[in-house]
Image (tube, rainbow, N blue to C red):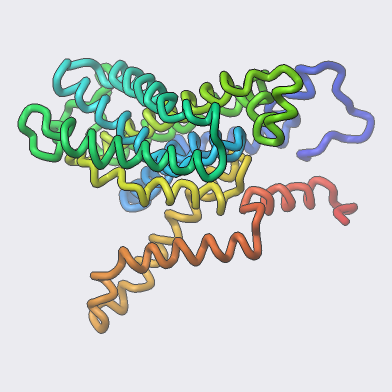
Length: 355
């Protein structure tokens, strides 16, 4: 059972805050581990492994957005810029300086974090609508100006960076197909999720939540809100840099078109649908958005011979579905899918007294 039996209680802080508190939860997590690392890549086809890679990339990208918006209360609409910085720094480190992929990823994450702090500096003085404008500026300055006009032209490459096959590898492990990319994805998602979850359980995480709930009260209680806001931007940028460095594996050629402003909006929609202020919400929102799009592709495929314009206008259908999903969730499920998951768990945990 996932609840504590009557008469069983925690005797210290460590017991109360450990991740998996019962044998039932341990069993669920072991099964999840086996499913993700063993069963799924063995029995799923390449199509579903490719879909899982897109979900993992969305999770990695949305973790930083969840940290800023859901846990620190700092609205961002330019997170794709920091993902782009991570992707380009990783690619340049491999192509120009011949650094190993792991080292390139670490450098990319660090630089993306610093770049995020640069545009997070105004958060010390402004918030709300003005902070939204600042993060939007990060998107347009970084992607549309610096990367498109200057960085992407380094070495006379035009606008795209192409990584030769076999370039991305970790020691003897060459990451050159969807299955290898999948294993890299699940490792990165696991590490980043554990890192964020542990940060939120620390003094830093409590400071972020205090700033989100009431920054004036937090400052009155001695929280250095400027320091912790900038730290939140740095950590969110690091997650974005990791996402960008990972996505390099999945691209035949790296281009600024992969990091448009619509991707920043998409990530905000992911956490709104999944649940603001919940790590579970990142996963639920990512799976929902990606799988809905795949279902939409299957739905219009039989109609394509009769209505060929549907296939040509799929991008507009995707945007329409995205907007409709946001509206429906804000109206009927404003707390997101994570809240519904929490209710379902409580129903079973409290049964037969679920009322």
